[in-house]
Length: 419
Image 1 (cartoon, rainbow, N blue to C red):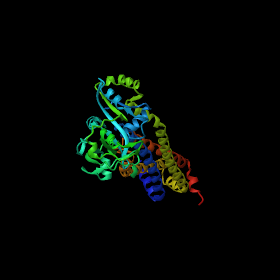
Image 2 (cartoon, rainbow, N blue to C red):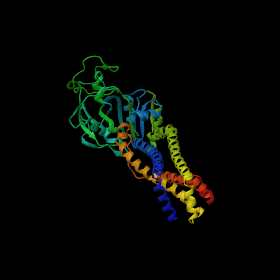
Image 3 (cartoon, one colour):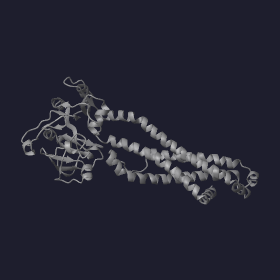
Image 4 (spheres, rainbow, N blue to C red):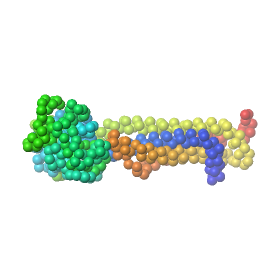
C-alpha cells in the first residue's frame, strides 16, 4: 500500500499544473463551506452574548423580535414610547430587583446615543454574566457628561476630557446638531464585542435637556445654555424601553403577563432568550440556503477533480498498461487512482483550512466594526471536523469512478492505443 501511495505521489508531481488547479478548486470549496459554518455559529454566539442575566425587556406593544432588535442590538426604531409613570410603577413592583431605562433617538457621527442612568453600568451584563467595566474614567455624574463604548473611542480617537456634539435623530447633519451643548467624555468602557461598544451613553436628564426648544425634530428658537440647564432637575416624560431583573426567576411569567395586560398603555414584555430563538427561527431558511450553496460548491469542486482524473485517465491508459506489464495487478491500479484522489482532496482540505484562518484574520476587525460580530480564531470544532471528514470521504468516493474504469481496462486495450 505504501508503494502505491508513493507511486500516486510521483504521478501527481509529474502533472503539477493539473494537480494544483484541482487542489485549489477543493480548497476554495472548503473555505466557503467552513467559512459559512464559522460565520453562522459565531454570529449566533455574538448575538446570544449581547445580553445576559436580564429576565424581561419591556417596550411599547410590538413583536418581540422588533423589541429585541431596537432595545438590545440598536437595529430599527421603536413603534412608540413608554410613559415614565408606567416605568416607575413597574420598576417598583415587589418582584423587581433592578431596572434599566433606555431612551433612544439621537446619534453621534453614526453611533447611537443611549439615554439611561447609572444602573446601566451596575446591572447590565453580557456574555456569561459579565458586567460592564471601564477602560478608563467613571460613570457620568453630571448633566453634560458621557460614557462611550470602546469602538466609539477607537474609531473617533476620543480620550477622557474630549467634548462631543450629539445630533438629533439618526442622521448626523449640521442643521440637527445640538452644537451649543457639548458633552464631556468622562468614561470609556472596555470592549465587550456587543453593541455597547458602538454606543454613546448619557443620562436621561441630558436627553430631556438637549431637546429644550426643539419640537418634532426642529429647533424652534434659542435654547438655554448648559449653565442654565444644569440648574433644573430634568425628569423624562417618556422612554423607549427598559430592562428588568427579578428577585426570583419563578416570577418571570407572572410579571410578563401583568405587563402585557397593563391597563394604562399597551406594553410588551419579552424574555430575551425566547426572542432570540424566534429570531433564529426566522433566519433558519437563510442559514439552510447558505449551507446548501456551500454544499453545492463542494460538490462542484469534487466534480472538477473527477473530470480532471477522467481526462488524464484517457491519456494514461498506456501508462497503466505498462504498469500491468511490469507486474502490477488490477487492484494496484485501482488503489493508485483512489490514492491520487485522496491525496488531492487532503491537500485541498489542508490549504482550505489555512486559507480560512487567513481570511478570518483579515475579516475579523471588519466584521466587528461593521456588524458587531466578534469572530474568534478558535480551533476547529467537532462539527467542522465532521464536515472535513465528509469532504475527504466524498473525495475518496469520487476516486472510485476513474479507479473502476482503470481496473476494467485490459492489458491489450492499453497496449494498442493509437496516438
